[in-house]
Image (tube, rainbow, N blue to C red; front, side, top):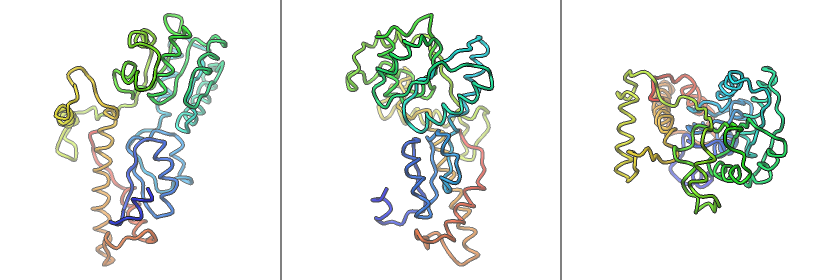
Length: 302
């Protein structure tokens, strides 16, 4: 980030991806009067305006999954659940929201286990606590480690229900096993993953109306798939790269930037100023960019 900021050309805004990156960048960006726009960050903590005064995002907060999780628990009559989470702020703040919702719904949380990168002890503790309904919140690399440990500890099958996050790629449990030193086979991973539930926010616009780009969301999906196939991805077998789910959010983020800059340029004309005048100490233009981004509305592919 420092390299970007202190080398030409002058930056007007920062785009960031996942929650971990976005949190760090957005917390610092206010010092340079810069707006940050995130397209892959779901951390509920990012909604705190006092901590992130210049942050916008196209990605919904991870707490949107929790009402669905509660509804499923109520539907099947599950009144005792366990939580396994990676020690990242995005998951910690999601769990806090989930705990509050469980309390309101009269669902008991029997244990909450946390891990940094190695989930072995945490999964063993779940077994000791006789956890049966388990909500898992972790990034996909950690998910593969958890799944392998589930297999070893026999925490799978008809007596167990696992909730995972829905934005992992489709075949997440059988890729990169050797590179990541996962000691389970593809077949074992498949067996352990069988029957898990996932929740996901809707990433794609569900109606087939033309969006601001002149494309419908289906048109965009076709263009994206063609571009990926030309890069050698096997889309025919639903082998999508990581980040595929967030593609419409990233695309709409770029449209947001363009529309906000257009609006800012119009407003600055009246002051005989331009975006090219912006420096990191220029609060006036920064406020104009913020106001433009804050009032940008359009129909996108997400």
